Length: 326
Image (cartoon, rainbow, N blue to C red):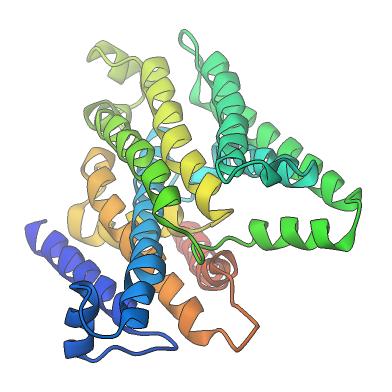
């Protein structure tokens, strides 16, 4: 376990340094140190502190929330193909943000968009809390999440269809493709505490998730409440995924892939995968963002959500084929 986590942390540190140093403007080691210390070229220091550092940190924070949520949901739903989007929080957070864009509310302040996204995610969480009350089955939570996700996607498409002008439509479409570009420390200071709390909430469910692998009845005999565990996972997913969607748009497959990459090293116990999956999720999203940034052409950005989908869809198909063979 420790060697795998050590490799993941080391890789994340190296990738973060590369993310800060590489791009249209490449820093030499000396220039990198000068920019970090606000010495030398003022423009290089501004690019380092105002553009690359918040973008790098935000990609890591959002990726950590997606990875931890994916591990917790796969353990709770006992489905290795589960993704944070399965409970509907990602889609409803996206719906809230699209509604703010559609009605022009984002013109009032920068925080309106993330607040609207969190409002949508909060509405989904309340519905799922209701579904997970008492001793509701895991199936009811899954079906409720699928219904929420389908309805949110339909309403989002309706607003795009009724968009009053091409500029509003393009703004909605670009936001839905997901990105951490052009983000500042304002978005980072909003997202980091909420996602951090969400990861800690998810981590508290580790022992209960391990017990649930034996079945709901056995877990209850061990003093574990599946309904309470479900409520904690919904809350943790709301904070981790909902906040990520609020500041970065829709980004998929990170929560699916992170736990699977760790299982060969850490085993099948879901409780042992949550925090390590946060590290790998940060690594995956930062790597995807670097790839999107380096492959983008002049005036033609490659969006982060598109990159993760292009990389994640073949991985998902591979998992499906492995499941069928199993």
